[in-house]
Image (cartoon, rainbow, N blue to C red; front, side, top):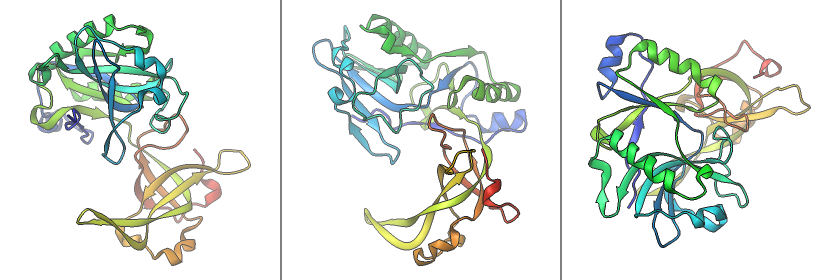
Length: 303
């Protein structure tokens, strides 16, 4: 079963308390948890067999990891009762280190940062309030062997959330080095209203110049078709080293797409893009086109 059909809601920043109340799909007590820059995974543990680890890639596809190739220590994980934990797969020893790009790399040590419990034995726990699921998940985690490699995601509880709290949480993101935070209602059921929680991420802008392009594609009847036009551009910045650093891919607006045969016209052009912070490799997350910068040269594009 694919346990990850529900997702967090990523809402705009509220400017007032009234907007916050209108947007939030829940009320009352909440838990605020770190959103780690890892790889979302659901791990099925058993008392008498190796674990099964299910993960979804960035394209939405679901697949099984080969545990031995991923990290041999996971072969030894056993639970007193069969259960399914929802977790982030992160680099062991430093949960801030990005693993999304290296998640299937042989020899890279990983850890499981657990934040939810979806099943115990034959009982589906998704109809149990979040606070109760988390409390039981914590009990299971403390009983697992090799505890330093399996732990509960950090967070805190609040009686309610207001716009001032949102500003405080946003200010913590760069200092903590995490990808963001998720606000979860304490007594909601799993995916109630198709929402697990509300993601709070940084949303800043940066400038970069174009160094590469990718073709735009479209899907028809399950087939991916080529368009012959530029759809996404890779941008770079000068960091003081000999060569510019490539920092992310940015989709460009449909009205600005040109044929691939004219792609060289885009080389060196400067654009401004929105992003949600950097990963451990220094590349920007979730890049979105903002505007063309005709007033700026490629030499002026720095972090």
